Image 1: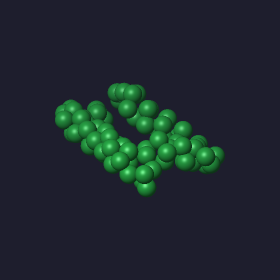
Image 2 (image 1 turned 60 degrees about the vertical axis):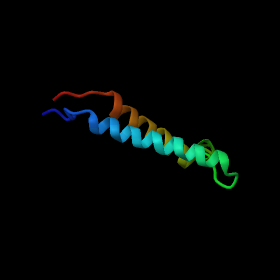
Image 3 (image 1 turned 60 degrees about the horizontal axis):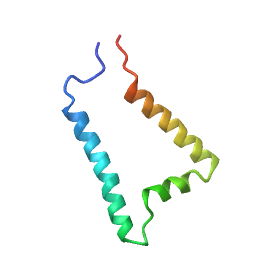
Image 4 (image 1 turned 90 degrees about the vertical axis):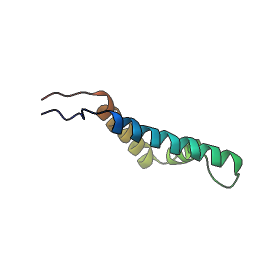
Length: 72
């Protein structure tokens, strides 16, 4: 059983949407002083220990699922 998709078009499309959303958010927030930037939101989330560990767990989970290839 191969858990990886055979067509990478969907994966590339999803990553393009994610990076476009982050880039668009940065463009909008740089022009508006009322909205927080992406870095400000991450910095705010790292202020408390629970969200800090949540970010570390999410980062580890994401890295595991993106870079570890398993063949059964």
